[in-house]
Image 1 (cartoon, rainbow, N blue to C red):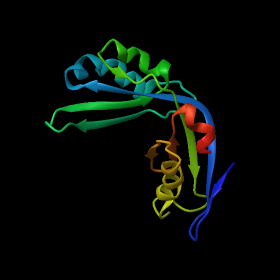
Image 2: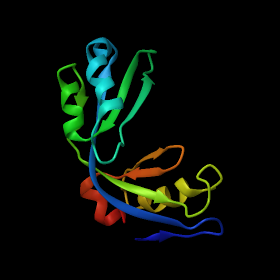
Image 3: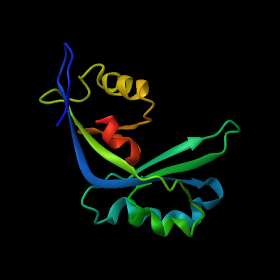
Image 4: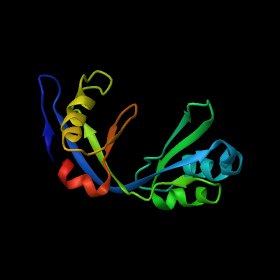
Length: 144
């Protein structure tokens, strides 16, 4: 369990066994994806409910949904026209100790700076109680 330290809270990283994929549902596919998306969000039996849905607008104002989840959880959305990246992403839980995640300052920067210097992309997901970093699986060992 590596620790990233600074003058503020110490940050511990825990590599979780789950792997996630990233998909995009284009605007035209949203209606046909409604039922599988609802199942994914509210009825998934995955051990880690790291399913993220984000509304994104492109430079023309067209909306799409970015979806992050396990390959099995995303499979029903493929029939709705979802485009999925085949890259598996590792899930790294970020713990800031006893500090409330909203009060911790510079955590993302302390994690992102060394990864960027090593050329490792990372998608950082913040939730109310927990944060996650998701580097591509092939980059996991160099990243941690």
